[in-house]
Length: 77
Image 1: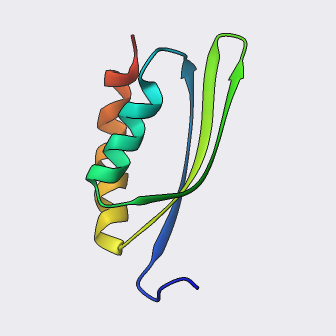
Image 2: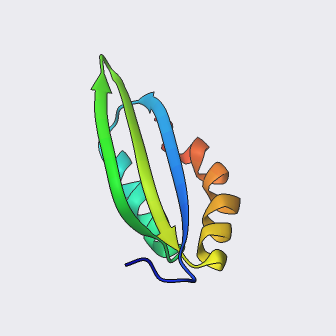
């Protein structure tokens, strides 16, 4: 049963595949205090794509939303 103070966020990404990309993203999600409730990962040719359902407190979700765009350039090889 979901907790009353639990909030949710869905994130998606598409880009060139490289070793460690999932680790980088999941570590950032965790460091912000969010949990991965569900995820789907796929390869389309040489492109990597994922969708993740995340949960966390309002503060954790807000922190992730504000810092995730800054992570984008670090994910490019």
